[in-house]
Length: 386
Image 1: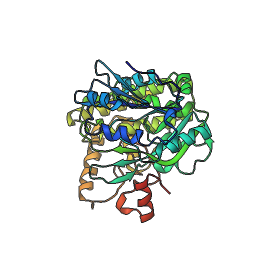
Image 2: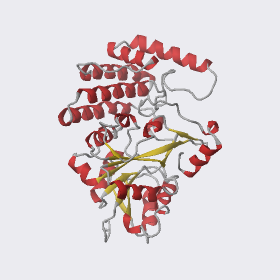
Image 3: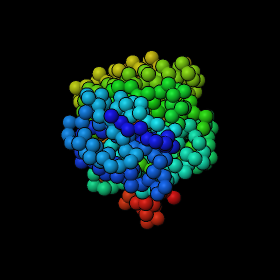
Image 4: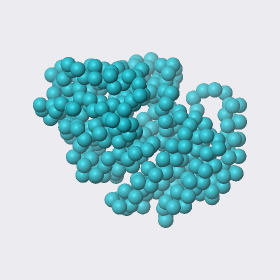
């Protein structure tokens, strides 16, 4: 049973919950404690217990008891991240929706900044910056974060095409609910569920706003996270990209857009197939050949801009379906990486910085905390970048 709020809030924050007993309280408190005085009616927090096998369900019951603005949905069986988000969306009443993962958290001052920007710009999509937080406490910028810089006012993807290369997650976007319904967007089952959700938001939006502020702290290295789990379920990425490409072909059949998405797709596949933490060695060849099949299926008639360096070479090998040459090149890069001195480096063999999660290329490599000036280090700690 979910209690309905007495007033429709401006913002619904949906938190799907599964197997995060150690992190759940931090996540919920970072949201609740950050709501400014006098703004309690503007924000509702909806936590979805996705039949979590640990104590998360009981924690949510206890947390919601006596707290206004906190609503809990308990699912009878585990449905996965995407469908759990849909369950929260089904009961959300806010004009805007923000999906926050339950092992992550928000830095202080985030909610006030988000509410202010939503009221000021009334966008279809509000894009947010984030930091990656490692188990040892180290914080770093995402490789795609520089792409958010310098975007003022309200814009469209046609005017700022680089925004398509920002990390394609749901949690770095606050979305107008009616706009989401207009696009008929929901999450699909399976891993990599953000692919057919995040890109269409930016493609279809008439009003995009960028909040150049760290509003999300993204936990790295958690046991059980899909980016650090070896599984055949990484093959789910193919079905998710098929859904994306089908949506684009039906809704926005633009050759330049298709070429951009094609390059991002192949780069993402290369990140997954080359990652020892995700791909069992005995599955790597099959994944590569599935990627090659998608290359042939979706290659734009007018071609596409190849990435520079080693990544571009790997694209060519995928296009030829040349597994032997790819595996030899991958092994050579692994040996060279062991010989190189440890330190900040571009991902994927020396090409421009590639985001480990999505294959996004950016102009600057991730900045590590130890390499920052004192001013920028203070900004990182306070949740704002200069």
